[in-house]
Every structure is written in C-alpha cells, then in structure tokens.
Image 1 (tube, rainbow, N blue to C red):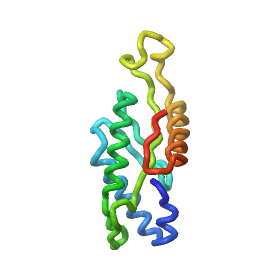
Image 2: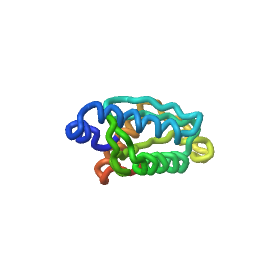
Image 3: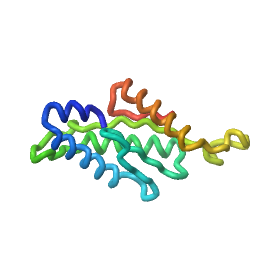
Image 4: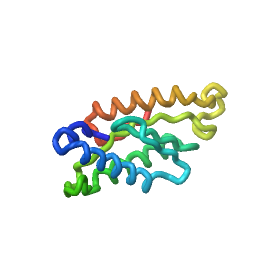
Amino acid sequence: MDRLKSLNDSYGHSTGADAVRTVGRILAMHLPPEAIACRYGGDEFAIVIPRCTRLDVHVVATDLCRAVYATAPVLAGREFPAGTLSISVGAACSPSDREAGSSSIARRGKTGDELFREADAALYRAKAGGRNRVWVD
C-alpha cells in the first residue's frame, strides 16, 4: 500500500487499519481463484499466482492498481474520495515451459526466495517510479 504511514499519522490508526482491510477485500475480489494472498507486513501483501505468465501478472497487477485507486473508501466512519488509496506492485515470475523455450536452464523454476527477492526489488522500483504502478521483473 502506498503512503499508509501518512494516512495513519493524519487520521489515526483505526483509519489505517480500515484502509488495510479495504485493500485486502479489493485484492480478494480481483485476484484469480488460484491466487494465494496474505498480508506480509504493515503495508505489504504477498500474492502467489501459480502458472501465471509475465503478461498475465502484469494484467492482474494493473487491474488491482486501478481497482484500489478507483475506490472511494469509508475509513473509520469517514468518507474519502477515490484516489485516497493506491498500491504499488512489484512482481517476479518463474519461467514456464511455454515462455522459456527449449533451454533446460531457462526452464528451471526459481526458488521461492529468489522470486521473493526479485519481487521486493521490483516493488522498490515501482515506488521510486512514482507509486500507484506496476513493475514486473
């Protein structure tokens, strides 16, 4: 989530907590059924989408960014305008057989740790690029 600390500082932690719940609900509504999503930290979520190509993940992540930004949330009983909430998405993919070609090295899947590090680095690139955007490594 982008700028959760600022929301907490300006409106209180109950507002921030409602913002996290709101984003969680939006993720649940917009992710494919096979996706697994969880809150990873204060303002971060981790999502795994099996058999998802680079193009697929970009489409899903862009849809999530748009859905969060378009929401006019009610947080701690107060109405906020659309655009109050936004997310930045960093993503990494393990090559599938159809993307990798015939190279056995290219087809080797990445470990969970490798994917997580790549996605985290991509997230920093998305935030550095202005937030409310997607970066797929």
